[in-house]
Length: 190
Ligand code: ADP
Ligand code: NI
Image (cartoon, rainbow, N blue to C red):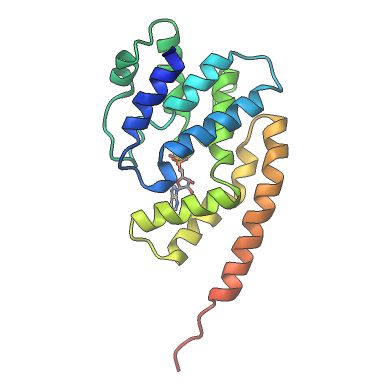
């Protein structure tokens, strides 16, 4: 098996037990979106693929506590690729770094955009309610996450093609949000 195939198997294992919003399919969607975005610019596609596969290792929200460093070692990823991944991945968190450093590597910007795109559209809605549910949050509480993050997320994309890809997903998100508010407005008790 080639290195990418080996990494896929390792990451799949790390994703076991994650709620559906952060399962291995999320990782695969981010990889596919990142590769789609990467066609529009000059970049290292192997690095893009590896960053996408590793991007949620070490996320504090997730049950798997394996360190990225250890996982990279298990996968036999060596210098200089290893250092690049260890530098870039911690920045791939909207809550910690809504904006990335100006000189951030293009491969990191691509995967950041891909991860954010997967938080939008129909899939993004499903993911938000899955994550909210996993934290025992009400629908109304999860809807606050739309106000705080999802409905402004298109302003935090880097590449033009990502902004283009986000348009339909943002429209759908807004439509869903408005419809939900309309259907769920509770009558005050007498
Ligand atoms: P971050 O980059 O801030 O660590 P993630 O990108 O890992 O966050 O979040 C990914 C998914 O988790 C998104 O689809 C997002 O909607 C969902 N999510 C994160 N925080 C919340 C929340 N408070 N309520 C509902 N969904 C959330
Ligand atoms: Ni992610």
